[in-house]
Amino acid sequence: MNAPIGVFDSGVGGLTVAREIMRQLPEESMIYFGDTARVPYGTKSKETIIRYSRQIVNFLLSKGVKAVVVACNTASALAMTELQREYVVPVIGMVQPGAVAAMRATKNKNIGIIGTPGTIKSGQYGKYLRQLDPKVTVVTKACPLFVPLVEEGLIDDRITEDMVSRYLREFRQYHIDSLILGCTHYPLLINPIQNFMGDQVTLVNPAYEAAKSLKQLLEENDLCAEKDHTAKYEYYVSDMADQFLTFADRVLPCRVDKVQPVKIENY
Ligand code: DGL
Image (cartoon, rainbow, N blue to C red; front, top):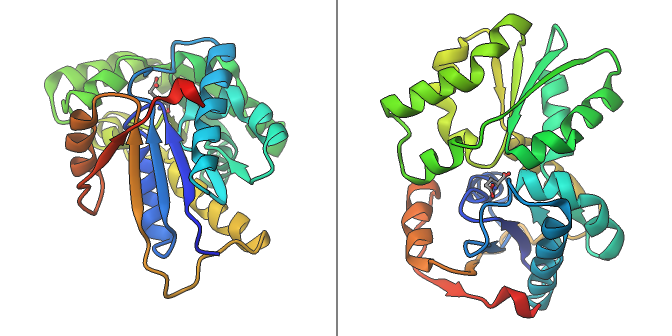
């Protein structure tokens, strides 16, 4: 089935997930929506995130998507149950695949999780990890300033190194051997985070595992695109299309030449 996959995020961060889907599923078309008018999601209530997520899934369905990827850790942590219950199309998020990948990576079962305040407060990563292994020890930390640092392009900057050290210092005493990058922006900070944590800590990017889960989900539901299908990508945002374009050019392997505005409150 050559219909597109719907992918959404609060803004540009989900492009790190879109990038992984492009790599692992090159024949699949994609409709990406970034809620750039209402970002950040990480500091908003569960009720608000559920309402926003419903509107976005309604929009994606109006574009004929065959499955939805919630490429936002906060929306995955706060709205997945509702989305999976309310919609007929398969919906997958970041949290479950991220937890699976972390369990595979850890040897000492001490796992760190970083994310937005909403994701960390929800406790969803810890819940899934304990379902996979009740003996796991989970240490969490919200790192809200990482998102604006990435969006400002301050990846290899002193100020980012300082923030990494401030936020992650306390993980050292817990002897974690894996750290879940539980926010779409954090894979772009892999270098400063790895430098600070050291090589003995494996950084887990849920996007990689989510793309793998998506592949499996499409196979199980007989929804895969034909092998020789040429993928097409469309990008939509609720505001600031130019800024989105600049960021997309930094993150994606292909050029984005058109970003279309959507009045998302109408869905
Ligand atoms: N995309 C969000 C996430 O992965 C980060 C940005 C935001 O707070 O909206 O949680």
